Length: 248
Image (cartoon, helix red, strand yellow):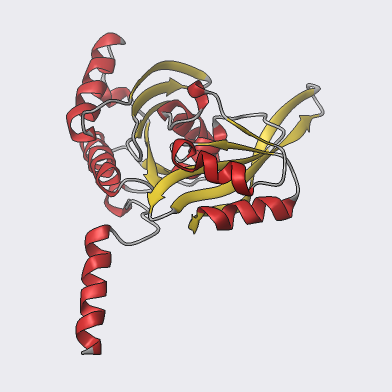
């Protein structure tokens, strides 16, 4: 099983190729250019470097959101175009779950936070639970969803963490934005993920896609859509304008 994975849901653009339990390549960039300038050139560079024939891909995995509206649309269009051209299925991975999966084996509650503006974050709560393979005396960790991905004020998710009364590890691009607010409000032991695990990664999307595939969670390219979780700024402004006009 060979998977092409993409993530353009946040500040990072990331492309990865994985085959079974081996990561063949990953190209990740967080710089000034837009995803429309980076994603396809990154894929082209990776393909040249590892002599990849796109037709050899069995599955295309994409971070489906939430996140940047523009980034999600670019990623979705790229994934759907590739899926249509290769006649291969798509697996959409929740962005917040992909962030959490990078901290595989962590004992703390994991709280990804992405800056959603206006004091809000895209977030969720997760925890890894060990499962023992009795035949091989081997442990693997399953990611348990405590709170599914959603949009909240930063104060709301911190209050839920405080009520859980367990240590927590934060990850995601919301950390620099809300670090001082977290320190002010948190009442449980907490830490922040290190730099190599605190942003989106296409490799994590690929790893989760293997698990989703086993569960039959695949989508036809024509049926795939990003998961925004809330209206775009333009849609919100239009809704507010219509509401104001209706009140007159």
